[in-house]
Image (tube, rainbow, N blue to C red; front, side):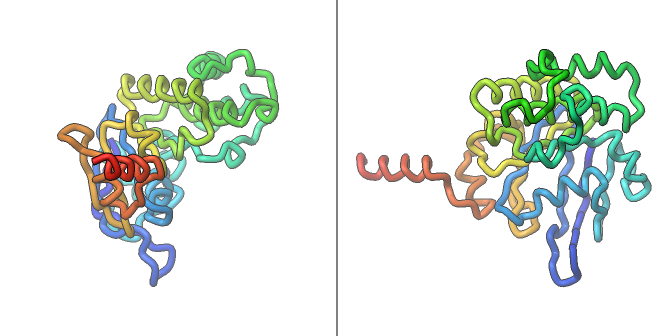
Length: 249
C-alpha cells in the first residue's frame, strides 16, 4: 500500500535527515515508528503525505510513485493526525471540524460521515460544541475522528495516546482495530513505546536517519531490543524493575 524505497531526505546539503530508508506498509497493518527525537520520524510522516518530497529514492502509494502525483492526490489516500490538537483544530464546532476535511476531499454524505466518526469516539453529543469547550483529551479525540472520517487508505497518528486517560485510550484502541479490519494502513509515531506496544503488529526503528530495526511483534521481539536499536534509554519504570531484580537476586 505505502512503500519507501531507498528514501533519503535532507533539509540542507550538509545535514541528511533520512538515509536510504526502505520499508513497506501493507493493507491492514499497524506499525509503530519509534526513535529518538530528531531520528526522522516526523520527516517520514511529512514525506508520506506529500508535504515533503524525497531528495533521493522513491515513495509509492498503491504502487504509483508519489513523485508523479500532486499533493492533493496524495492526501486523498494519506491522512495525518497531529500530536497537538491545537495545531490541527481550526473550526468553531466539533462537527464543522470534521466537515472541513470531508469538504476538502469533495466527499458526499458529509452529515452521515460526521455522525459515524463522532460515534467512534463517543462524542456525538458534543457535535455542536466549540472544540475548546471540551477537555484536552476530548479535543484529541476530535482530531482522531476528523482524520478517520476522511476514509483514507493510510492513516498516520502522531503520539496518539499522549495526554489521554484510560477511557480515551480504550477508544483509540477500538478505532485502530476498526481501521485495521477495514484494511487501512495505520502507522503511529510514539516516543513511549511501552504505552503503545500492544497496538502494533510491527515496529520500525529509526536511528540517525536509518532503519535499524524492522520486525513484527511475533518471534520474541522485546521492548529492550527496540530501545537498543534506537539508542533509546529505557524508561524509569524499566530501570527501576531491573534495579529491583538485581537487589533481590
